[in-house]
Amino acid sequence: MDLLRDVRKALRAIADPARAPAMQAYMKSAMPYHGVPMPLLRKVCRTTFAGLRFADAPQWTAEVLGLWRGARFREERYAAIELSGDRRATPYQVPAAMPMYEEIVVDGAWWDYVDVVASRRIGPILMANPATMRRLMRAWSRSDDLWKRRSSILSQLGFKGATDLELLYACIEPSLGSREFFLQKAIGWALREFAWTDPAEVRRYVEAQHERLAPLSRREALKNCG
Image (cartoon, rainbow, N blue to C red; front, top):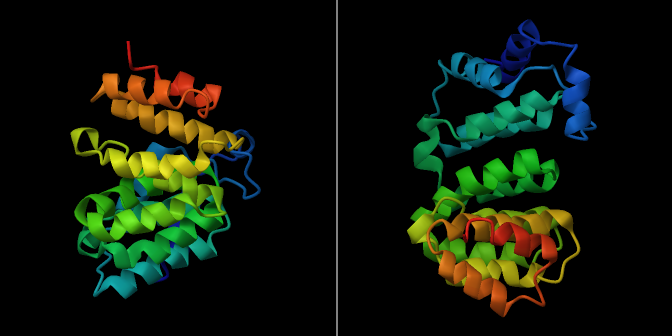
């Protein structure tokens, strides 16, 4: 089964070339679009992936990266990310999968790829394997690659009361002085999400780090604090 061929054929069948340029412009993408909105893309993925069976983790990884590396249209890379989260791959969502996710984060280098991977792929691995993943997220938070930094900050989105605050603050710390919009935004987003659980703690942290937090991060962080 040539999965990339089948995905591309299915996407072409429902492509809307008229909307593709606007999608490409919005995402500032060098890679063109077929013009397929996300709900339809997910439907294509469900149909196209229906017959897939993974004998082991290496086969799953190979299928995901085959789509990712072979993609010529952005939706084909979205399909790779969809496949990475396929329920049949649940047993393989372990720290050993992190090199694959690292490739997607570093190579993708944009928020539409990175944020899904950080929160919906890396996050669950962190939740299930805290000892190993804490060390890795701390290392990513100090990386020269801003998207690995952003991923470490966003990896606990949705954890609510299970949020490891020590880890969250440790991942934010190396980027506090950054002028990078995507890091400032990530810091504010992560704090804003945790504020649904403990607004008082977020207010305390923002006050304590007031001089070091960018104005954008402060504004975002306090949106859910009342």
